[in-house]
Length: 296
Length: 245
Image (cartoon, rainbow over all chains, first blue to last red; front, side, top):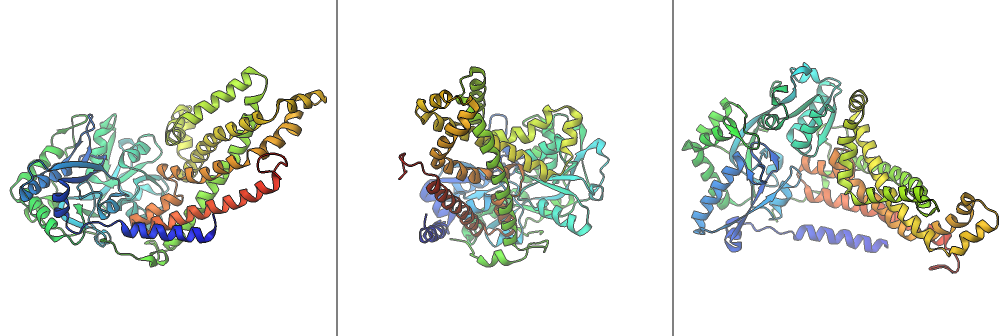
């Protein structure tokens, strides 16, 4: 390959990226296509994950389906098709931007950096970042991690916090970035890492999947509070208003609290284990006053 | 499109402040090069050895080399990587496995990826070498043996010098494949080029700039390899054979 051809290739790529046009008006797009594409996660228990029949379920997925119901009413399209598109921490934002996915409800933290690229709905959940470790490990808090291997999931806010903590406090931790929460837990379970840092709700979710849930414990002072929101395209006020009012409606009507009880305080698939994750003060406040503020 | 282009992102400092995002990419490039070149050397040594074994007149040796090829060629690379990284330490005796898992994670990831990529590519190189040897007229082997050379000497002085020169073009594609396949290492957390670009996306949300930069870097590596291999091909051409003068 000669160099002039190489530069034209690069130029071509740039054009291609620029041409990945996404419609500004999502509702219009949904109406034209007669279908909506929801982005979902594959192992974000209990927010958005597969049950043992490979169906997508979870707290966020339930919320997404309520939003779909509202869209059906709004557009008077009772048989609107719902397409499901699995996403990862790394591709969820580009997929929203290029129009592949219309709405992603999973476990995505709303932060100011991401707001430059995509829009966020009313917050659906508030989590703190903590540690999952073996009961017998003796680890009580982040300071106990000095010199140890610690795993976290690539592309998450925990990864950043952990790297920052390592620098700031000179903990000399060795950080492993696994591909998804399932792999992070596998890394912890096989003894490669002493602890797994992640959003507390997800840690309870991984704990529920463990072979022997009794061996594991969630510890540590929360390093940060994070607000999960559904992701939608930026600068699409019509669609955002519809999504926001639907979610806020769920919260003020008390329905969101029922969803909370269903996913966090009762037995859930795949193993019928109860996460026993009590409603936090932040969540009570959120349900009382729904908002779309980023906490980061 | 609802996208804010920002090419200056590469020069802005990372959150920890010790480097720029461009520095991250170059660091990832270093890992990709080390991993791929290491795996390539391993694949050549192992692959040539196995390729020779596949053609020797000994059923046991030829059969075991064939078995190796079938196993490593027929299992997806990603699955092989997970076996090297996640399953292998569990199969070792518990104390040894645990000791292995407590070593530096970066070293674990690197060596798992190196072994995986090296063994996988060796199976492919082996088949090229076998094809190269098989493409030579049978008389060459017989002539070598008739001259009183032992079988190893026949391979060393007659068959391999010809076969290796003949298979350079297909070997070039294998060499290119090593670089591209090295991206699988990102799935076990090795911060090589493609992982570093994903990290850049995570931190800056500037997905397109990161992916374009990484595409350009991969293309650059492969263009260099292609040029190098073409020069080598020209110098080692066998007169009278395809492409020879």
